[in-house]
Length: 207
Image 1: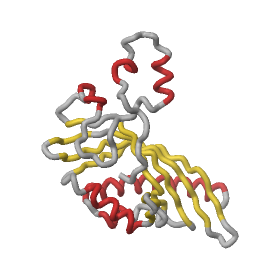
Image 2: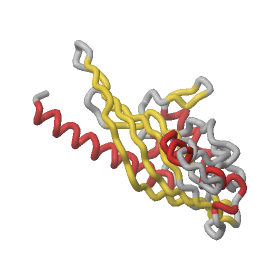
Image 3: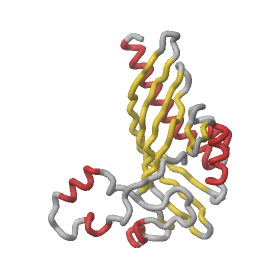
């Protein structure tokens, strides 16, 4: 591929990955599970020895059932195209990673839970086909009812019955954030006032 071709492919890849993330949000909120799993690689690892889109659809169903209404707002999206391989027969795979800000809202019983987070994504494109998800790993800023101040919620996390996420880990999980506040000796710094008890151990999940 010549330089112009490579640059064009890069631009098209970035736009396609952005569209992938937007379609994920739409499929989640419309409960279109077939469309949702079609956004993932055919070889997607679901865990517990299960793989593939059929297994992923079975995994998503009970995850989505507790919430009658959800709204996923997608914002900042940083994409890095990481590698490209090609075998002698012309087949191969391209890979990329992404960081996606998202502001999900969930109907949880009588609560309307807001849970800003960042998805840590991995993408793949096989044999020149469309880009698809390999995995999505969310890290949460907070979870709280829309009427509550997150800073007044225990550990900044109140999401009853969430089967996947159980604590907030951002911004404390960022080394740069820690270094910034560690350089301040003031006992009233935000680090001393707002750090949740749990900041690690986020699950690798698909939603």
